[in-house]
Length: 256
Image (cartoon, rainbow, N blue to C red; front, side, top):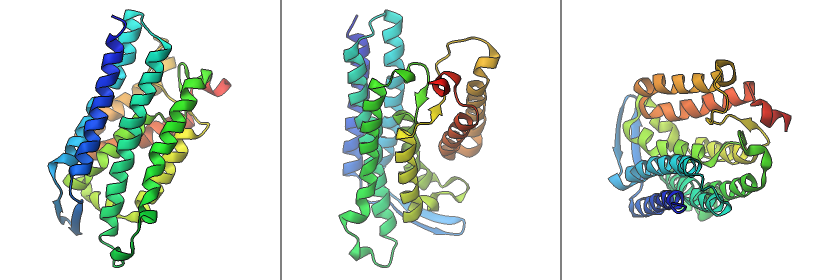
């Protein structure tokens, strides 16, 4: 019984490792946007990587829940969870951003002058994710809420980018073919993961509406935005999550 949550955590890691293979095997992203007409030529493996990150997030959600239900929480489980998360929600998003950056540079006139130095900033995401997870394991203030954006939120956000490029909802796909937009996203994500900013957690400790109205608002906006914005709903929900956390910081994290 004690190993059941660890097995679920390893399923998270397995999905992350498989997502890396999908990203490595995929040819380049290529997109040509002309007004509302566009073409995207990119293979299924990249989108399978996005799907695998989502599946891994499901495993990441249930491993802790199962551990609490079975009353088998352990320091090893906590460390194993962080090791899995740094791969799935750190390395995989970093590689996705690396491929998106390289694809964006293919549209620049000086494409042949691009070196690894231009693309290396994408690899800061796994570095900051590892730092954030190590800090989380030692920070007693984060038992109920977060300090800094959690890595699964970052992983899910970046996993939506290839899907937005493919389906181009509301003609947003071209933004992820712009190198400066990608550099800005990388910088913001790295900062948000390690910043001393109290962030909402979906853990419900009290049943009153007053204590949970921000969580309820976030869930309602997420449910409403998905059919309207489609895959663009993921960046929208992420931004709303950050704004709600800044405007209404969790009290216990704030006091800490």
